[in-house]
Image (cartoon, rainbow, N blue to C red):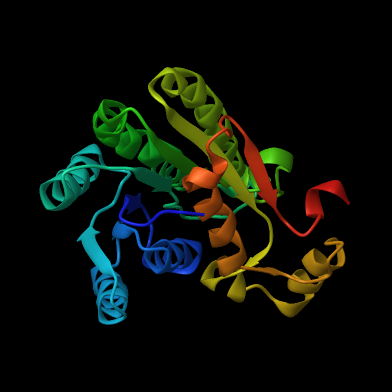
Length: 247
């Protein structure tokens, strides 16, 4: 899974799955540029990576805003001159049953999870296509495949990422840029840590492996798809869910 000396761009890289992806890419020798909305946390992650001997750049940005997404990519190109890998991971949740969901909660989730991927990919596309190679991985979710009550906004946005992935795979393949998606299932992160014990137990009972996944397990799959080891894989959706969607 060779990523050494490649320039990897990761959105939402300051916590959870995004942080694990940044760490795994850095461990593999990539130069990692990442963004996030929490500037203090992001700088702490960048410092930790740098202190461990990696090359890392953090830029505070909300990718749901096109100007901030463009500023982020401008900083990456100014520092590194190119983009080899793009991981669209930024995401938020605003859970509620549809009849109680506000228009603001719908728009915020779609804006960050789906439209944010559009803004960043569009900003990075010329740099990727000019090089005649590279990889994009969109971090979707099993909720985008099977839905989840109370998450109509999140499910719709993550399903949109799957369609986005397949369309771009066809558009970018002639220039050697591969585009794939990863759909994590129930993963131990800050997002799931606050669930009541009974809800957590319900989720785990539906997973054939009978445990939650880790952010590191998702990161391994993402880095595989970014690497030369996956050179003949594009337009695919890889599910990392302990068997949840087949149970």
